[in-house]
Length: 267
Ligand SMILES: Nc1ncnc2c1ncn2[C@@H]1O[C@H](COP(=O)(O)OP(=O)(O)OP(=O)(O)O)[C@@H](O)[C@H]1O
Ligand SMILES: [Mg+2]
Image: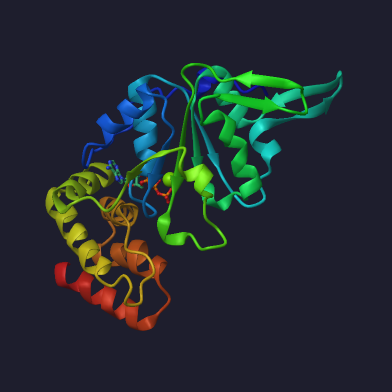
């Protein structure tokens, strides 16, 4: 099946609640075609933001979930064998560059460095992508834009972006939204009352205080939305929080007790 660029247009507005000036900053970066790095913990709205921005800008969005088995060919493209012989197939990066899409490389640190450097010629003044096997120097479409996401909490010395990669990007920091914004997000996304959303957000705040004291990563907005969604399905709030928050995030019994206590304070 042929991948069509039109299929990557974001048809309906992905709802996004801005938390600071990230929309204006992204727009300015896009206007300057400055590659953008979205930094922040899991479940804090990075993917939703990029979908929203693609919709706002009216540009197609090509998303790639990066992993350590990914090769440069997976990004750039390869020859395929079919009944008529061999045929070149653009990888997602070449496809996006050719057609002027926003290319979103999710969790880019997961990719090996020799894969990551494939983006270098596209993210400097050259804006080209050499398709070496094909013998083509692909000039990026004027609308092409590159966005990567990066969770600073997970990186180790072994797994980090090279300075020469990092320094090609402008970065936007994402963090947990302040309480009022997060209440709005949870209420909207889960379809629960503001009162219920407020309680979930307060549970989230308590749980985030445990980060570093036994929890590796704070409870994400995504988890609070999940709890809300179960409540909206008619699940009792305590059971919903148990399933969506405390059980997924830790196997440590003391930590579970602490989280259960936070839940019991509000429900
Ligand atoms: N500012 C926001 N506006 C609207 N929804 C949000 C916002 N922040 C978080 N959400 C909600 O949280 C969910 C998770 O967000 P998202 O998938 O964008 O996280 P992420 O930062 O991409 O996480 P990961 O790093 O795990 O991919 C979204 O589906 C959405 O329901
Ligand atoms: Mg994401």
